[in-house]
Amino acid sequence: MATFNAVWVPDYTNTVAISACVGTMAAAGVTGAIVVGKRRLFRIEAMATPASAAPVPAVVRFTMGNSGGTTSPAPTSSSPFVVGNQETVFDSSEAYDEINLANLSADNNGAQVAYTVLLLSKF
Image 1 (tube, helix red, strand yellow):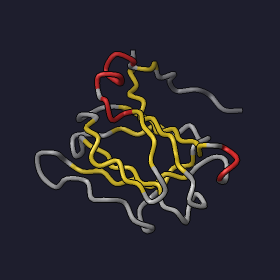
Image 2 (image 1 turned 120 degrees about the vertical axis):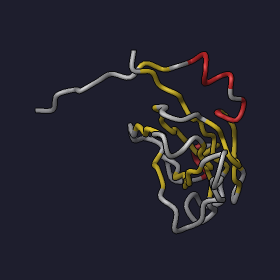
Image 3 (image 1 turned 90 degrees about the horizontal axis):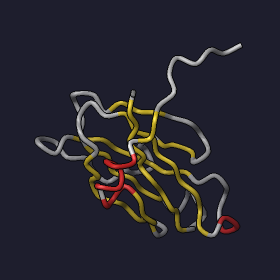
Image 4 (image 1 turned 60 degrees about the vertical axis):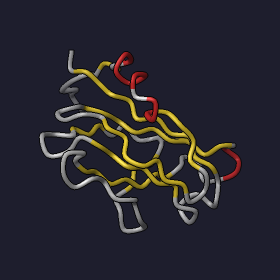
């Protein structure tokens, strides 16, 4: 039986302050760098739009970078990915402060993908 270590609270105020945290990517679309900040917990959610157009849940590739140094490059087919129905929480740590998302045509049968990067709080 699993035991929860923590329950993260959505940081709604800071999420909506970053306009790029919610959007839609066309097939082969890339968001560009989304600055989430250092030492931030966040999760990525995605779904194909319309849902009948692609595998559900959608796949989103990502890269990370640092706006003060090496910015996040456009994700490619060799970049790691998240699947829209998984509860994956990331910590940007001290090393990163931005994320770049991509909707590769091969991953989602050429469908659009709606995404959100949700910032989380420990308290």
